[in-house]
Image (cartoon, rainbow, N blue to C red; front, side, top):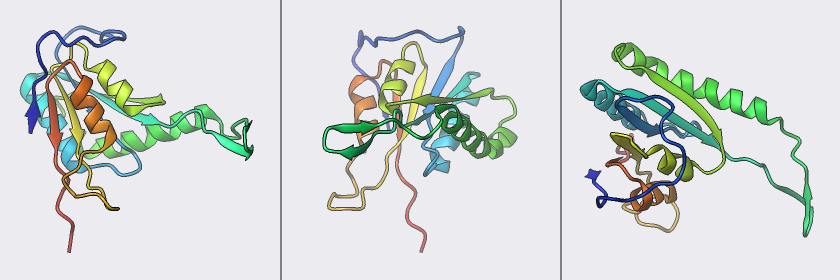
Length: 168
């Protein structure tokens, strides 16, 4: 499904680092969806566009020692960013082989995935996100919070890819 937002929707944040056609895709490195990446690469190839792959990771890591007392993170942010980028590159490799004409730039960013994708939608040709199945108490048709936020706030058209059927 592709959703085109109303004309004139404004997004705050920086524009793209370089001019030219661009497709943006969100990559969840803990549970990547091959169909989301496949569609993003195919759309980038059709549009002769650069593919901007955003893999967000939670930061800062919040731990509590007692109510109201935060403990500084014992995790090195650079290590988390490097691990996220390494995982993303691994998931992109087979798609790069199938689409050698597509330049795909993986970015590991700290914080809110939805916010990064919405900001990247500024001047993008398309944003590709996955729709994940909710397993607990919610119907399978519900959208995840990242997908919902992108649909509500992105400035560019958004392609929402349904989850693959469960393997029996």
